[in-house]
Image (cartoon, rainbow, N blue to C red; front, side):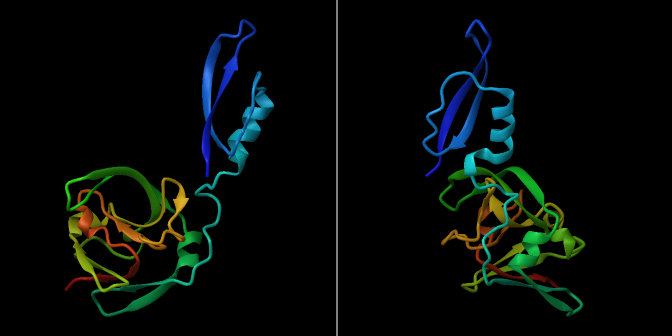
Length: 182
């Protein structure tokens, strides 16, 4: 489990001038923080998982089906290797009314779809929801939530649709197909 440790940076008068919160496992660090340590902690992050780390390898494929009938299969590994975008502070509203606000990162749906048609997202369990055409350009196939890979998340699965502005019930998880509607 990762703990947040607060590390103060002090002047010679011991007045805190800056506080860092670094995810470190049982980091019992005290005293002054040198510039070298700040740089090391920034780049290494005390072994915390990061989005830049390669996601665990999973055997998962996503079918992309265009309105003209053409289709392609994309593996999880291929998606992880692509350039990605981050949707910051996306509001996921549940059917219960609860709202979660998170940062999600992944591959934009606009990689495959022009946003001129609705896109139907289907999960492994057969659950389908429509992403209206006007939201396709802002939607992503999310592979990370809060900079943590979804690959080992037993509920959400290795990927899900994140579509800001669309009700959370349409954020299909365990995503297996994206299909342009007629």
